[in-house]
Length: 276
Image (cartoon, rainbow, N blue to C red):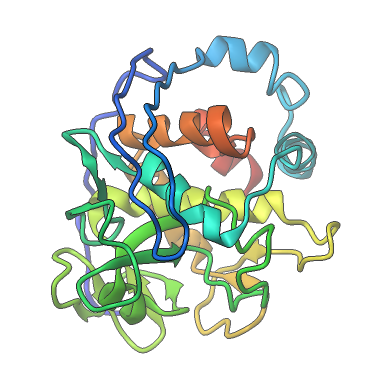
């Protein structure tokens, strides 16, 4: 990897500020009709979460913290792969246009109704590539919306199952993204989002629920092994791109309305360094 990046900082917006979001009609996936609904989300203050949800993790580090968080976030509701379509229309709703979603890598705002598998549409991107651990679209890691995001069909294909790292050539139609033969670099505005999704998966799936033990490592070309890299780069991305209001709202929507578990690294970004 030869391309170098200067450090950047994105302002960390007010954590868990209470707000309400009006969601428009959730357009149907190609084979799954859905009725119109209104979505309202109220953020839970971090202090409240620490006193309740995270109480068994506080004060711990290393493997003890990882184990405690695994126990906490493994208590969840699971959804099917077909239900992911409608969930993403809520979790990734454009704050400026309730009829649209924001695509992860391109950052484009696209109609919720334009989902599918054709060129120009958006589909379901597994940020932890589903071949890394061979879980496919099975209910569990294959449908966990903490790491599933809307993305342009073509750009999703370009990313494929590559590991994450800095460097490469520019991705056509996705400004700020780069790729080469063995890795993918997302745009700066979502680097931390990607890192925290990967690390969530590493804590949530520890090999005790019929799926592989997913772990990050500091390499690329992981193939079908249950690993994704590059860990040192992911840690850097998480530090340089802290959670913003979009990522925080997304965590709240998943917790309140769908899986009823949280990504702890959005609530406590410092826990990345405390574990790894």
